[in-house]
Image (cartoon, rainbow, N blue to C red; front, side, top):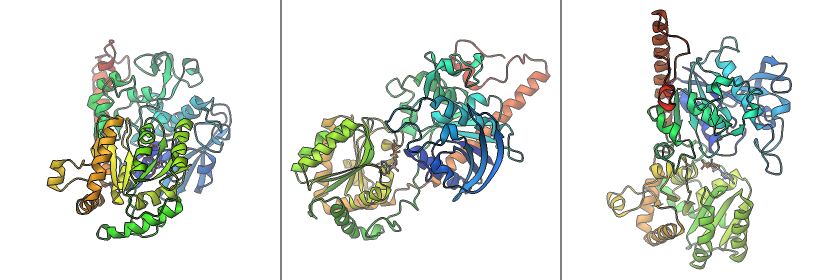
Length: 512
Ligand code: ADP
């Protein structure tokens, strides 16, 4: 089965978060399920620089304000289509913001073009290539299902509902969005153009990255204004937990760590802990527990909760290795704690893949106190390295960590610690619980072994995506065939076959 994925990030070429990890790993895992994915990505400098076997496929005289080329290329195992549009994508650094952290003014056009080209490829632009299904990732690809109404089946995956791609409705003409879809039953979201909303409305199926997050986004608390639409489309909404690349995150093969180890060799973690301490200038206190943090430094990630507990815990002898960047005021808070507790709290502000591996290998526990977390990837890597995740019970964190409560301990299945609600008090209580259990070396070791044996690879998710893709393709083909038969019988064919959503969301009922 051929699938065209549309994404603005793909590991290892361009990454700002988990979306890139998923877009990079899923095609490789899906190949084992006989699903062949080609991925359409913007030609950022980092992407163009990594391409092999490039071949031009199509030339645009004017793609949103300038000439562009569609390229076919490979990058490692990834099969790509790349839009080389210098006026849109040849900008260094973060894909979405300028060097001052401000959104690029033309983001609507940049990602509108991505979705448009995706829809065109799906409609036969490239000779000899016809995908059965389009897999759009997040708001950046959200308009693809809107452009494609009536083409191949479409699935949109929500990696984070907080990023919705909202733009002024005055851009409708530039984006070639016809007035009939610039409505509540379409692209419009509170008077603006909603890229993600459009995808959620028009796609044949919606997935998100964990079952708990799928349920959370259907509630007013977690739905960020889109819960009504998501409830109306609940029948086609599925949560599938992400995996991680178990070759990249492998304590037995990791080139970034001092001592590689298997589940029977957990004693070797001590050497990684020592190396991490040395690297971050933490005091050499082999018996002190060491907690790691690898995160965007934002409120979503609960970094303010970490800042709040740091001084106390440092005084109680806990050490911290923190890596991340983000909100300047949170960076400052962590920096201040680090400078007050030198030797106990270390902070590296920035993005550093190698250090992320060292923290996973050398820490005793990893803190992820997110307010919401669609799936989360760092806790999965932590499990694999025998680093016990201490997480809030939300989204994918709830689905992937087994809390060390009495029942789970008695059954011998615990892999970490969860707390709820997401408050400082409950976070503190759970940190205390973890520190108490830390004293019991035998039990802690048992948890580490359970953690390392957790299934965190892409295998199970790839199977679920593959069967979903096949089911959606069949459903759409059946519906089209049904619509065709009806039209032949002289039934009203004023509009294209309505998507399931059309009859359930708006007041206007669809044609019969
Ligand atoms: P997000 O919400 O940021 O996508 P995820 O947990 O889903 O969170 O994915 C974050 C990914 O980015 C993980 O692979 C993590 O290891 C990585 N990461 C986050 N911050 C950094 C950093 N400062 N340096 C290196 N890797 C990082």
